[in-house]
Length: 508
Image (cartoon, rainbow, N blue to C red; front, side, top):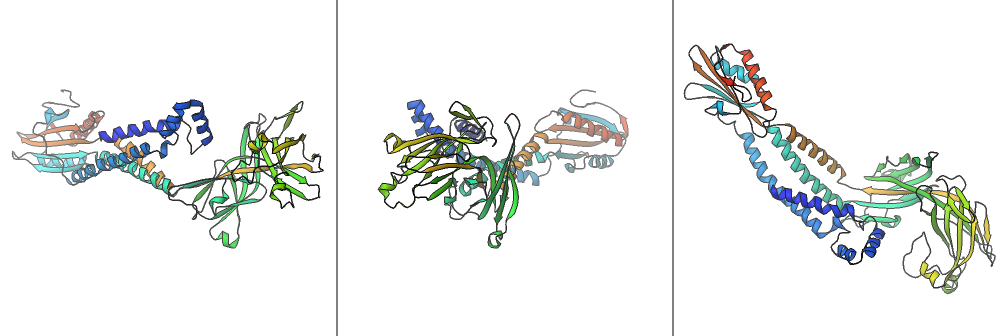
């Protein structure tokens, strides 16, 4: 048990870096910034896996040792408890007056009648009646076995919680995806449908629970101060047989009301805006793109992003890399201007506008390296292969005409929602074990293990009644219970004379 307590302390201590330091699984960019800003100290912490605490070797070692220690504690305690349940209460001590709680009185009833009254009062106690060598009769009673039961339930539930969490880590997955709120759909058919995906150790992404979600609309309500009141995405979903019958079921998805279907949970995490641009090329061909831009100010939803276009009808890769376009800049749902500088004054769509730079040249899409959809490749800009050819502030319906006759128009804006899909097959077990931990701990703290003995000794003209009580764990509060049992028993009997005694250890 001491080993388990030490390991619990070490586990709590080991979890502190996970709460105080940025973790790669949550935000790798902050980790890189921390390492870069702290020099050798940051690099040392990185080598020691302090930025991946819960997946580190040393945290897993403490976790595994705690599991082994709990098993080592529980096996002998369970066997001992099973023996105690089958055992009988211990025999009555010879001198009950030496116990912390005792009482002595003389009654007119016979020892058999005293025993009958004692057993009637002690119903619900585990008891055994014995006949002693001197003709006296005694009852040994014990109560509070649920204390050890609660203790064992607590530890077994903790063991089960550890196992459930481990199974969850192996078979869970979590993914995030941005979906336009214009009837666009997302299907949980593979990892490529996600923007980011975090699989468990035993998940390869080929056997995900199939379901589809269609986002029809998004509603955001704000207070006059700009503080968010509520968000709701009106979605349809289909899973199971609905996929074969093409049946869609409506659901109002809100922040604290996830969709539960096909064993997964779909959460509404965030939202934002996606400007729509149309490019009319000199040959008359048009391309229209609606691309999500990310908020840079969570209060006013001022957003930044980049919408990228390839020229149509250009098969020569070298020529195509000289004529690619990117519209990059800022979007404001409620635009306010200070000269030519634009900002946002409110998070809702009251007066949308964009402040854009039009870049032309090589976007670096064919370099073989991934790049953010929210910005252009800065290396292309620095090398001069991607140049700014126009800068303008636009409202819906406005357009820019480039020197070569290309026209770029700002058509409007649509909303997007940020969804998270979570799958954890052990979630129900985690809840059950967590409830059992609370129940077991509460039981072990509230219930006290205590013993009580009653001896009836035949005497001249009556029976000498001796009672004794002992709390096996904590005496606090047991004196009152012993006093109640004594008073109730004496009320059923007829006192002959009170010779000596004490309740709760006090002489009469």
